[in-house]
Amino acid sequence: MALAASAALVLLAPTASAQAVSYSAESDAQALNLQLAENGLTVGSVHSEVTDAPSAAAAGTGLASVLADVGATTAEATTDGSTDGSPDEVCESDALPDIPGVGINLACSASLAAITDGNPASASSARVGTIELDPVSGLLIDPLGLGEVVEQIQGGAGSLLEALTPLTGAVPDPLDVDGLLDDVVGALDLAPLATIDIGATQVDTVRSGDAVTTTCAANGATINVLDIAAIGEIDAPPVISVIVGEAATSVAASTTGGDPVGTASPALVRVVVPALDLDIPVEIGQTIEIPLPDPLGTSTIVAADGATGTTEDGRTFATASAVSLDLLPGLSGGVQLDLADCASVAGATVAPIEVPETTVTTAPSLPRTGGTGTNGFALAGAAGLALAGFALLRRSQAV
Image (cartoon, rainbow, N blue to C red):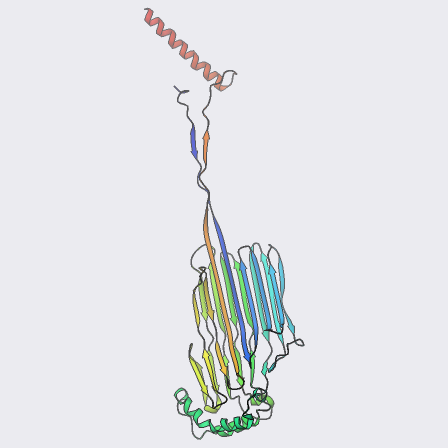
């Protein structure tokens, strides 16, 4: 019976499981996008990214235009233990492109990428020196000529104050607006249309432990429109000053699960117009119009906003920017500025790896036909018992 009942023994191996983690993160920033009389350039552009490959990459440009990229750096790492780039700045001061109407004396950037123990990291920064836009007279490509522009500026002082009353409230009287405008007009041949002192941009992206984090910071700027004091002859403030704070974003994603967390901090903006005794903060999303008589047009200042959300591929994003300006549009298109833009995006996916169940089958044991091992003795014993039982049965029948 024991031999007949021998059957295959089926063992089910336990299911093995593991985790597959995929992730990516990146940040981008630019300090300034400038359009002047149909000439465009981008200042302080930086990029940083990492992926689960693992890989890390970074790029920075002090100044980019259709003519040339100046103060540019790149870095890329794709193998564990590798490092590329440097945290030290690369600066250029004598190779700036000849862009009509724009003067920039310095452009710098730095980029670094590395992978350590399987963890990628990258960073980039960029900055430029003071940006100076050429004198207004060089932009007055207008058949009216400078004389008629002067007359319209002076004649429009009253309408300018009236238009700004809802924003500024009652303007103190007497206010020597005409006298200030006389000074402004007298310096138009020499004073820059605008000077821009702009902060650096910085992006960092890294995996550390169970987190992938990417951050961006655009450090703001000060824009002075018709900066008469810059020529050192007239003691007067800029006609318009726009003071921009820092814009920042960040996204953190966990490689153990859960939703990424994004934060956006748009920059605070102040507008100062000394002739109107105006010094006010601009609310997020608010638009301020500063009307000037033709042909100068209406200058517009828009304080941008920040946002967080989810991209089409399921990653979390955060964006923030500071301000957009359209200044003196009547002067050959004027100046359009977009400042302090930041964008970060990151995501991580944790998926189990299922190992299929495995079936292990043991074949039934067959009787041994020889030998003196354990199975041989067992078979012999079983046979002896069988014969003894058979003999007893026959004896009982004979009796």
